[in-house]
Length: 160
Image 1 (cartoon, rainbow, N blue to C red):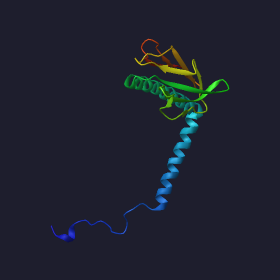
Image 2: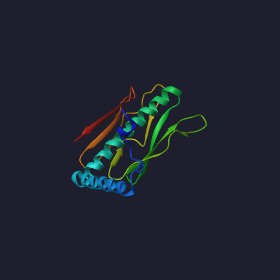
Image 3: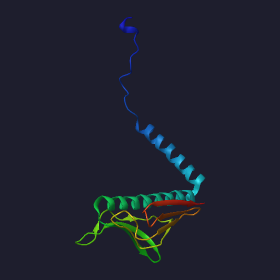
C-alpha cells in the first residue's frame, strides 16, 4: 500500500471549541432543571434525610469501633437549638478531659431530627450505656437509628 492512500488526520483541530462546551453545559442544565421539576424538592429532602440517617449510623459504628480499639469511651454529643439538634460531634473520654475526635457534623435544613439522649456513648467493651434512638424525619419518610444497649449494635429502620 502506498503512503498516499492511507487516511490522514486533519492537523487543524484537536480540542473542543468554547461554543461546543457551552452548548453541552446548557443541555446538562436543562436536564437538571427538568429532573428538579419532575421529582420536586420533597424527593431531594427525602434523599437528604436518608443520607443523614446513614451518616449518623456510620458515625455511631465508628465511635463503637474506636472504643473497642482504644479502650476509651467514645460518644456523640448532639448540640441542640430550641428543641431539635442542629449538629453532633464525636468525642473520646480521656483522663485529661474529653477530646474531639472528629469534626462537627451539621444537620441540613429540611430534615428534622429528634434524639432520645443528648449524649450517645459506648463503654470500653463496645456496649452502649443506654438504648439510644434518633429519629430523622423528611417530608415523606422517617428513619430511626437505634442502638442496642447490651451489644452496642446500631440498627436503621425506615418508615414510609
